[in-house]
Length: 496
Image (tube, rainbow, N blue to C red; front, side):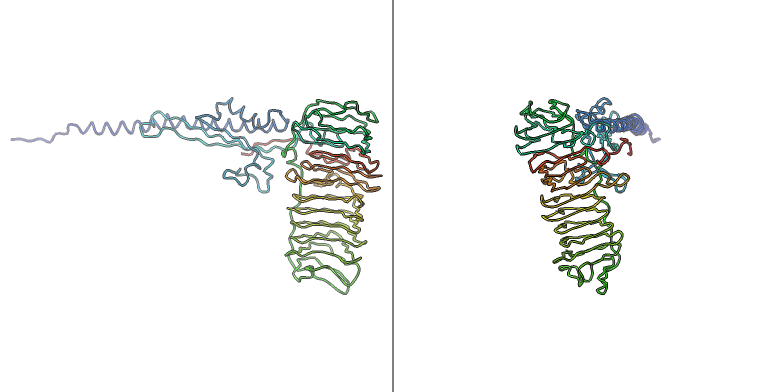
């Protein structure tokens, strides 16, 4: 009997494999195209949302930058729902989290950058046959935003500006013994309470411009000398940490490459690190005045400069002190410098005697305090004092004649600065015949203004709240030549 090998059925197997392959290619073409299209659309939505959020921030839009960013994403089909999620944040708010902003330029200030991140789930059609229900796309866009074209504490023209912006009373409180005159300026109170501006009937207040209050006052008929009046229910301004994101803080801390040397014959110190232990105890040189030559001095391991008796120090040229845990106490009457910069890392500066410096900088990193104590005399025509989380204290019996840095300087117009994250109280005590020029910026501090007979401030004080006490006639002059101004040309750039 003749037998034959049948090939019947093999074609079915090949056809089955072919169908699977065909479905795979179809899934790749159709579903892959859908994923690619969604990713492109999501990226476009993220880009436009980041720009919309930046524009809202620049305009101080009452809706807020986040709402405007989410609104633009929604108009492009992306929302916080089952199919997609959208987040709009300033990069400084996610530093140290599991999802920080990445790709920022070296040395960038995260508070200047807004990130929009969109996550979308794209449902599959043919790929379901292969067990793939959906594919997830993740895209993000980052914009850099600087400046503000709208009114803010720096441009509102108010000599005293309370930035607190909730529905509270007594945000600006004038006590009965207050005697204050504001020349060519008024005050601004950002709280919306019915008594946001509290005026004691026996106070003596003069203003050449109006008191503007987002809420109102307990005494609408308060007698103000001068041409100023009280305006209630003015537009409340949006003021938060982002308002001050572009304000400069400190310069990079310099380093020392050699050991400091002391010449006992000339009572002179050459620059370098304190490696000899000379500064580990009170500085008690043989002469009454120790001269520091131009250069950088690094005081390591808590080394201090603590002068005893009437001894003083002076510097020739640009002198920089880098303090790491150690303090500076100056008590003599002849502390004179051409140019003195102090980089304090959780280190305190206390002046008990006299300090004259043509140019002076105090960069207080961490909990570094700056204090002029009773009897101290401080004079500088180019001054900037900053404390990150510490305090700045001027005793009522101290004397200070100081000017903020001039135009062109990094800190032009800034005299004293405690940033938004520093909520320590600040007492503005102006002693007899004190004269200050510049902006006193304490945006999250409760400011107590004690003034003082003969005290004059040419500039502006920005605080969270104010309490105005007595202490004799004092004057504030709003002069644009002496105050800090934010970047004139607001910008926003899509960097990613």
